[in-house]
Amino acid sequence: MSTVRRPPVEASLRGDVELLEARGIRKNFSGITALNGVDLDVGYGEMVGLIGPNGAGKTTLFNCMLGMLRADSGVVQFDGRDVSALPVYKRARRGIGRTFQRLELFSGTTVRDHFLVTERRRNGSGHLWKDLLNLSNPTDDEMFRTNRMIELLGLQAEADQPVESLSLGRGRLVELGRALMSEPKLLLLDEPSSGLDAKETAALAERLRTVQEQHEFAVLLVEHDVEMVQSLVTRLYVLDFGTLIAAGATAEVLGDAAVRKAYLGDIV
Image 1: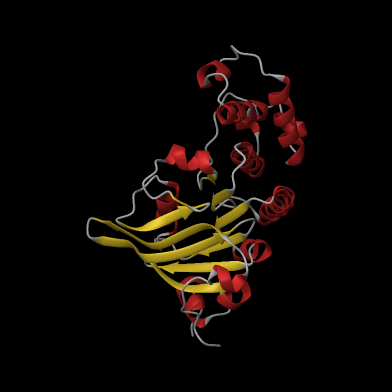
Image 2: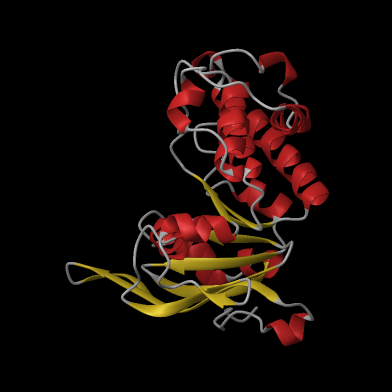
């Protein structure tokens, strides 16, 4: 099979409109090229993967799309608007959510607390410090939405437990739920299976697939677990040393010789 070396599939050819369009994204750090003119698309309700070896530039690209880093050049369009100059919070308000490779939860608070605080931030009610200190009472609507997320993720048994008592796999679900409480149009998932065993990874993938099908948000998944990638995404991008070396249907890309050599370590 010939090497997949082409730009992202055009929306007109796929028959859909793009939610996220990144064009010509470049980023240098002290003269080192982290991203070399990367193009990437994610359609509405689509699940797309982004893989590559360590240091390939995946997290840097995430940060440029989210606004945590400003690209040296290139354009990021989201939901039909140029968001390249917007700060993180304004991109989040437009519908970009994210989870992190390293689990980021507030110790001393419960699963329910995490979802409730996120709901209050979404609708602009209350203050974060008051929520954390239990100085304000939740409304019926806030509790309804919080309980619905708990049920959706199957966290009823752990709802009122402190998050530090949870297994890593259950903690990943809490982080996922917290991101989903903001009702994102696009969810950027940064290695959600990091630290999980095979059983936990499979359970997380199944839960993510179910939730995504119900709510129809788009996903851009950075992940090292190839089985998880294959089970979730229909299209795949591959970065190597900041350069996009392959893009296309998941099975085709994973079967490509250049991808196996750069990422999977095959001798070809």
